[in-house]
Image 1 (cartoon, rainbow, N blue to C red):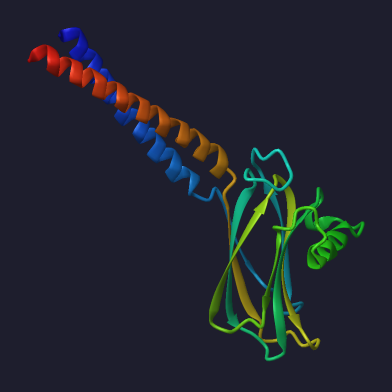
Image 2 (image 1 turned 30 degrees about the horizontal axis):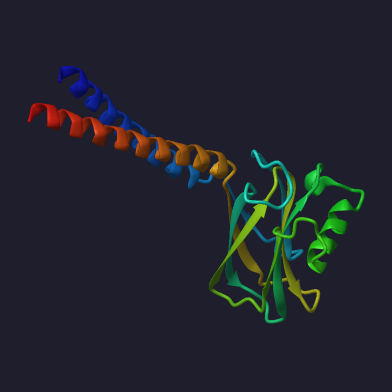
Length: 204
């Protein structure tokens, strides 16, 4: 009886251990390990920055892509603004590339001909005092993130647009390990139930 009671105790501890690990891993998977904020330059009506996105995605459009959440906060706009475009342009030199590759990829994204289309969004007829949420999914690499306010004229005065960007590079690997821990917790629970029934039967 003592041997089976000890095995029951260990099985129950395994249940709590694996379940706790799963909760911790899922919690970290939902935490953005990369965050940044950008403000559109009123003088040119756009802003860009280079970001290195790390991750374990093998490449191509699939379920291992790295989630990117972008919040566009529109505080003020000129009356002739038609849209706000958001780009994540993959380029080894980022926004510093001078060979025209950034502009070429940008045009492909606008035309819908990019091999990885989940890195472009357009907000048609944006409204002041509104917040727009955008979700991208990208591969690891160096990106040029651009937020462009499109106006009919050349006057850019009065533009007040900010963007908050959260990148989740560890979501897929942590969620995968968390799922494995959850399965192990389930097996440990089944084992604990068997030991518990056996110990109860022996005592009776």
